[in-house]
Length: 509
Image (tube, rainbow, N blue to C red; front, side, top):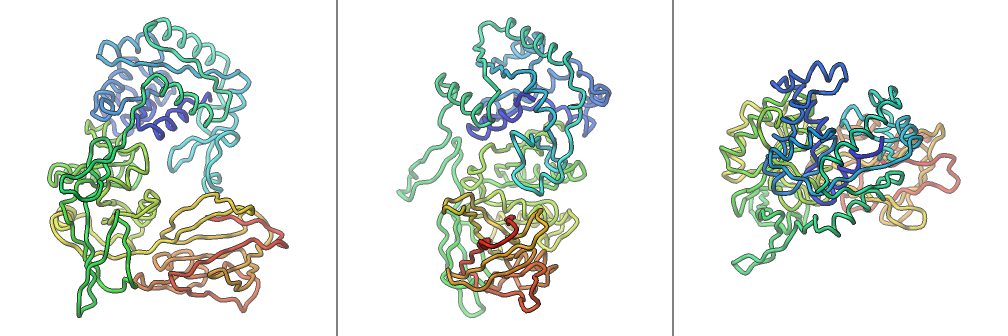
């Protein structure tokens, strides 16, 4: 409840250090029944401390991996005793600073009452101090296992172990941190100390190419994305389209076939897979082919990296989302349509080409069969390929005073609805700053052609071919029978305001 995992995640996100969560590593070993996992299983199921020799081996194996050695690491949940700290030093793993978080006992007890876990992402939230970002996530949260068993003996044991650890490593730098603050303030305090001690170093640089061209982005010494060319054909003639910094710019609607040509061989691929142990065997096989067969630098999500480590395989992950835009040449998905939507959310700027293999429940956007994985990947990487361009919507949420709250890209749709309110929403609708009408309804769906077969169709909207440059404007259960779905051109700027006389607020999702 003191917030160490939240702090570790934030420091990792800000500064690129590897967050090593001992709990996640142990759970992965148990889930995949590794030899270490089998030795730990009985203790984990009884919720008892796992023997030191098992935990130490799991942690040391992880810290020996290339990313920890190159980027530095943050240990979460280890060491918990002087013997564990001694095992680190005997393995040649020296830590430079220890941050001890302090908070009053009544604050910790209060935080425990509000801690919940998202069963889909396994992310931990605190309904009071670290609430989930959306109502959808809030509704599926479950209480965190074990928090109801909070007792004084745990606090006493934690204090005893902390004292042991500090006395066993007098040469290290121990920093006391007041954790009775907002998570962002705690993270900033720790970051400030790390900068003052010289722990943090710049991770990004711009390098000049030898051929005198434009600057090329480099992250951690890795070259940036390869340049590409798009060739648009309508059956009679072909013309090239500009691609600058992976942002595709068209002079007209992209309704014809579009061919993607690699100006250089792709360097970096992002492999995404559906969560759960069922697809891990296929994921590891795909990763092996991409790295060994195609010699690509491969990135995976953190949870896949943890599972792969339990199988004795190291796969690289990332710590900052903006790095993906600068590095990834191609995205490979193993799952269903939901995974394609997830891939879109990872790229706030231009999204790289995505090749998707159907291993999920729905497969409207996953046309490739995994049985042909190696052949399809070889064709895409080694030669030219036809691409199907899908538009996304840029949504900006603006406060009443005109300040920008946030913006995001939506592949399927943007929905403005009444949320948890029992009243209908009164929504003023504008197109290119011209007033259209006021809609009294449960909400409004603004959908892309890709999303026209999803929520919009369920609400009575039309199905639109992906090549049609349009935005679908579909009301959800309108109070007036005369209001019907509208199709706008893709260049239209739509604005939805909550009417001043509305009895309900509005949610955007």
